[in-house]
Length: 296
Image (cartoon, rainbow, N blue to C red; front, side):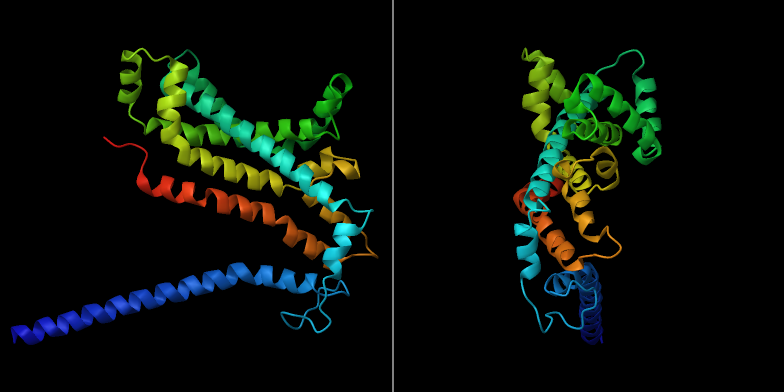
């Protein structure tokens, strides 16, 4: 009886394990299909030379690469320049956000000074109001700055970067401060005993341990700025200063000449930099998020 009961229990456990694997596989397949369906649809539209949104199959019967050729050769739409503008703005913003946020978070996490809690609460309160609510004020501020410093005024990438920095610093400072708080203070004390300065302790001891959150913030900032439309559309007025999202809107902004084919082709090509970035940093993301930052 005991042997039969053990065998039955073993078979039941195996069946339960197979069921768990099966439903997880089904959920994974559905999630992948849900994520890929829009991409597949855009790909089909990009191959349709009629610039229509109506597609009946993955590969249209009259499929061609004319839309891709159009966006790369049409002098009226400087597509490659738009990609370069987006990359420039996104990379500079991401690097500055990571650098400034890490310094601010380290200061709030490790140092004790008057007004520390009040400043932290003020930063959090400011993040409650999104940039879209202050878009008119931001427009007027950039216009005034442009009178004295044109490189940071309206229709400049410098001014747009300043706005992105202001919108990203608050939340990321709180996020990174929480990560800094998980690093034991004994490491700082040991470094100070050995004669290290605060900057040396931050750059050589603490900074390598918080690399995972730096990579995450860099990617989130890059994606947010690379795909932003509203702020860039309001602050940039020259076609040759447009970022990719704003430039692509020109293909579908007219009521009588909407070109969905080039728009879809441009959207697919514009996603390549983000995919390349994920491919470059995926190892850092996986190792950083699974290995843990502190070894005691």
